[in-house]
Length: 321
Ligand code: 173
Image 1 (cartoon, rainbow, N blue to C red):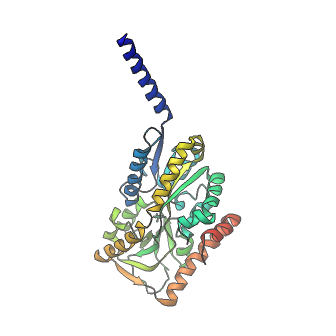
Image 2: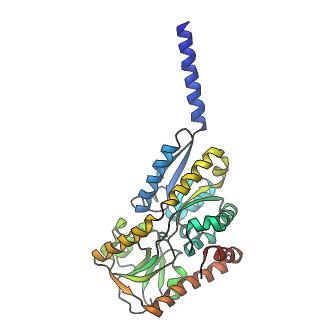
Image 3: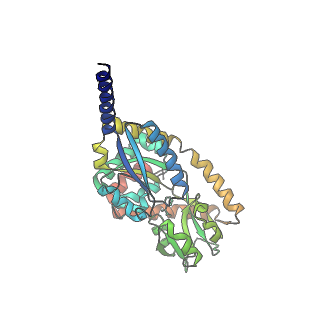
């Protein structure tokens, strides 16, 4: 009799475990940024807490960086469900929709975007055009800069070849640059071989891939705001239970609540660049204003041309000029 009871208990336990496991979903995550970038370490800290909090509910399984899915293919991989979830920036998936690159133009924090309807509007567009749920913006307060190996004394890049992504295209072309698009993973070699005279990148992260070894100047001021976000395949998102979606949403808010971190990171990285011997080319006063105004005006003009209705709406919701 005792044995029967024991067997019964064991059977119950197995059934209970099996049903708990059946409810736990595992999401496949990739990063469009290289695995050794700081963004990925930041992401993996978050994944760790999701997995701790999500025991029996939801787990995230990090597959890898661009070696798993090349940088500019990550957007399509999320759209089609080849992967469930990704960390990327809009500039890497303009091949999915042109609107993706507009988030760099945000002059309001993601906390404000959640309050004023921008976040919902982004999700409407991302749902409809990219089959994606826009889960969280995990990088803010990281202006982009132009980095150079040749000295300039005015904002004119005539005769210079500059590495870009869609982030910088219109702006650097407006400054007369010749441009070449590459993923972050190819910048080091392009610099080392002298294929490019400079590149666009945010204030932070140069050291992750050793670009400081081949960087002489940073042009100030910076412009726009680097956007790095977490996107989820919409079919996968819809297939989740209420509890699983709630977990991801609350973890997204927790991640964004830590975004103040990036302000100090910007200060630290600026100092680190100076310590590494990177000199600043500082455009002052009017020149600085024209530089930044041009950056925004050419980018919004390109956005309006590519997607007039969404650009106008996003400009009203994200912009501040
Ligand atoms: O320069 C880039 O590769 C780029 O577009 C980007 C966007 C956001 C953060 C870092 C880089």
